[in-house]
Image 1 (tube, rainbow, N blue to C red):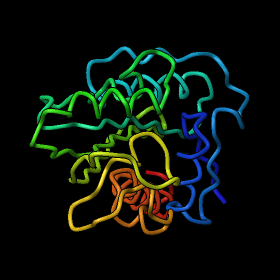
Image 2: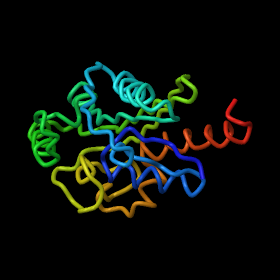
Image 3: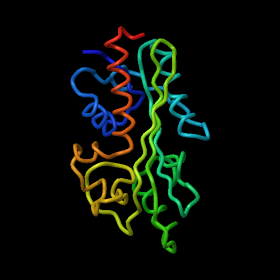
Length: 198
């Protein structure tokens, strides 16, 4: 089994990604490698933030690692909260506060189209590669479901009538933004390690 560091302390995300990666790779979180320094994500794009986190852990550990950044992009809000999704209502990363601010911002909007976008930066041997996953949907008028995290209770993907927070993890992973990006990452990792990591 191959160890790979995922530059995150978020156990929800770690569990989601490990489920997609399967048994060939052992995912190590920042907590697993005892890395507790704050990583300042001050880029103006998802790609930039993913790169900052991956580069920080690569320089610290010298081991294969990847980082992701995810944004909820709402059409009627000109793509907001976007890169600021996790701190939309403030620096506390408060999911409930973020949800309430989003629903309030959309209160008078008829267009509720939105998309989740995940960007992953992988670093192997000092070389970077990026993977992107997108899922389109809309924002519901009120939260529903208790699974998932973040904006999951108000995001309903296209062709579904339930939110991400009402889906089982396996069902969500089949269609989610993170699932799509991680599948591309997984395919790349399998090819790399089958070829001897060239």
